[in-house]
Amino acid sequence: MAFARRRVAPSDAEDVVAETFLVAWRRLESLPIEPLPWLLGIARKVIATRRRGNTRLSNLYTRLQQRNPRPQPTHDLGDRANLAHAFNSLSDKDREVLMLIAWDGLTVPQAAEVLGCNPQSLSVRLHRARKRLEARMETDAPFLSPHPISATEDAR
Image 1 (cartoon, rainbow, N blue to C red):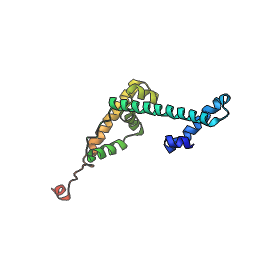
Image 2: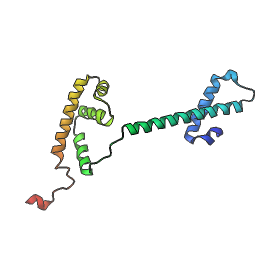
Image 3: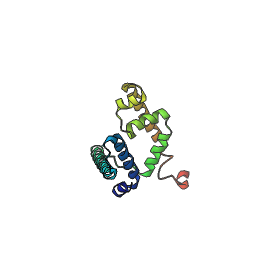
């Protein structure tokens, strides 16, 4: 455990030790008379394998981020509040379709597979959900305007 703690984050040390003893258990017939150096050698290889895996995962994440960068928000708080209010006023089915496409980044065929329907049906559902969201945003816009009308302007 001390060997692992000196080489990896404290949260990973227990996993390294567990994996080391799993490998040792599988190779029990190879156990030397003095097992400590043998176990430390296994632990060293386990740590190296984990680091390579973490590096590959980090590189993959970087490549995916470069391929599909997340758009930066361009709307002000009033627009986002209006969108959130309109989105929350939709039915569960409409919200689910919109979230699968917009938030989870699925294609229409992928989202159709998730929902257990054919892509044509999902395209229709998506179109209708978008139209309902647009309509709600238009009707809610004055209510959630970032610049409310004052009482003196309203009296005119």
